[in-house]
Image 1 (cartoon, rainbow, N blue to C red):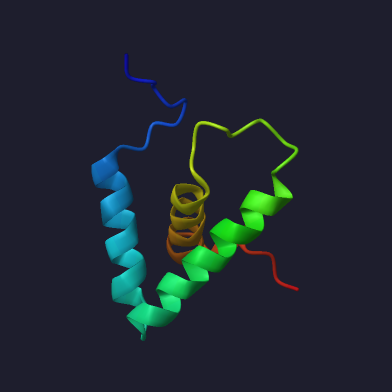
Image 2 (tube, rainbow, N blue to C red):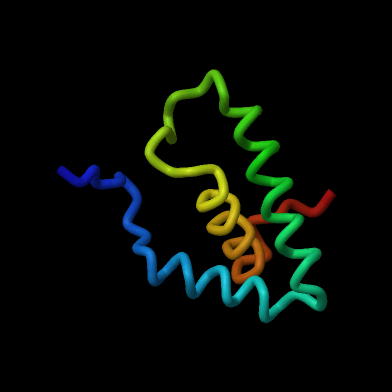
Length: 78
């Protein structure tokens, strides 16, 4: 039986988001490393939190980073 995620992002949406990130980046390697570092950081931050156990850290990082790319207002001005 397939487990359904509570998130409504499909594989094609994730692929489009990843392509958007790569196209917006000046360096493909650098954006890949940034996604990996964010996923690793989130994995350890949310280790005790069992809210998003259905979504893998890399997928969550891609979604977050693409949201930051398309919606810059979610990033607070510091």
